[in-house]
Image (cartoon, rainbow, N blue to C red; front, side, top):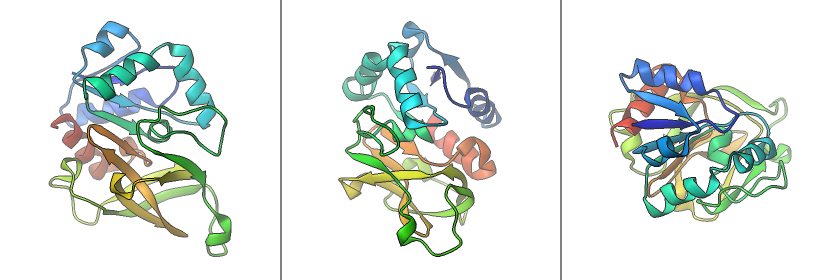
Amino acid sequence: MIVIVDYGVGNLSSIQNMLKKAGVDSVISANREVLSGANKLILPGVGAFDTCAEKLQQSGLRELLNEKALVRKTPVLGVCVGMQLLTEGSEEGKLPGLGWIKGNIVRFRRESMADGLKIPHMGWTDVSLAKPSRLFEGMHEEPRFYFVHSYHASLRNQDDVLLKATYGYEFAAALEHENIMGVQFHPEKSHKFGLKLLANFANL
């Protein structure tokens, strides 16, 4: 069973609806017993990094999530700020992330971008695969996803980069380290591409 972690933030029902379109059952839950029994977890997140980090801390689920991801090796997919929480922290705030993937979240560097490009990065953007992944098995040609973000991941180990995209300059659009995965974009808003990605996650 896929469990979408309800810690007080995120577009939970939209993710669940997209999974339903893919023919995948899921539940939205903050119940420790339900989360403990999950064979896959989706960690959502929208808004500011510190808001999500604080809500996660207040939920009392952090220790359980650590056990699921790091000890039991349960597949986890972070979405948007949920992906950012997988890292050690963010320039947007002061609170720590989960630290499962080594690196931090940084703001788009305007000085490295062409004139006229606005922050946040918003809209459809092509992605390229940085390494093989079952998340992208059978993916539609010329994959593109819907982004809304002002910050992106800067990782210590480039082997953890799954997808790359370009907005002013190249950045990590998705992460993967063993059973831990994260996407900066919104698969639930990315039509057939997001549908396929979520279906692949369900079939891991």
